[in-house]
Figure (tube, rainbow, N blue to C red):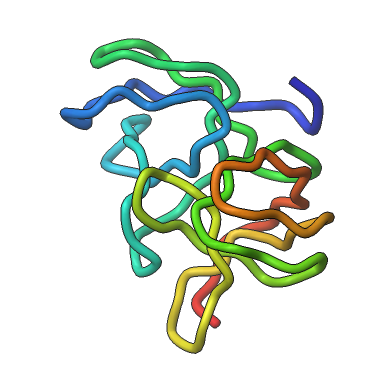
Length: 118
């Protein structure tokens, strides 16, 4: 893992969360794998987590991230199906930007920032 100090969340979603997937917040210190661009996105999971495990979530700074839809370098990114990064469009929750281009299935470096609706 590289990047700023991570936070820990307890995985409460019904699906296991793989490494480098975007995480949504779900209550006080709970989270799960993001599946849509309009969720409350909090960061990127730094290791695989099973139901009830603690997730180590990078929230700010540089991280790696799984790509679900083709992204270009420096494109603003959001969450999508399978917790992967996708390019954002108007009204999406933006979690950061891609530092490199990536195709579906790639793991690329991203710069995370506090999420906002773009």
